[in-house]
Image (tube, rainbow, N blue to C red; front, side):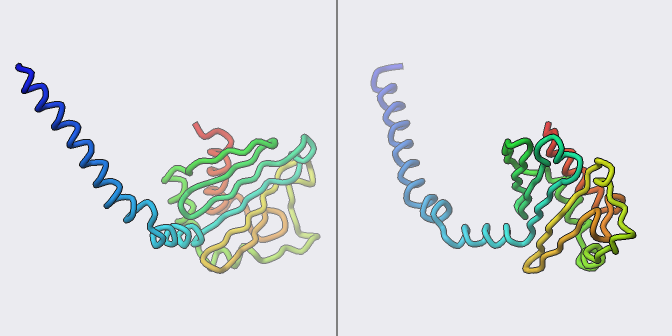
Length: 170
């Protein structure tokens, strides 16, 4: 290999790198990175479904109870003992949750239970769960103590599996 061959290979690499950088700056960045329409679509998608969940009961004795918030893009924020954990929920868990969310079921779950008929586990140092679920512009407040919602339902089991994942995301 002669010096002119090495020069040709090196100069080709440099020209290729410069052309790639120019193409990135002129085509990709304006179209995708700084595109306001894409940002608006992502924000709208994130507003389609939100879940805020918290535990209460016996865990209050030891300090604080865990809570999490979940968006439609599967991003979550989980707080436990003053520490904040963020990440993306596995696709399978999110599919299970979305499959069990039905407006008619959620309306039934929001029905309040008379106080004398409540079977709350936190009365005996257990843990109850409170959920605020928003789908589009409709909000549903369900609770394992105050409303007709139970952890033995399909939705309750899906949410419990999310709690299990949040406690140990490995």
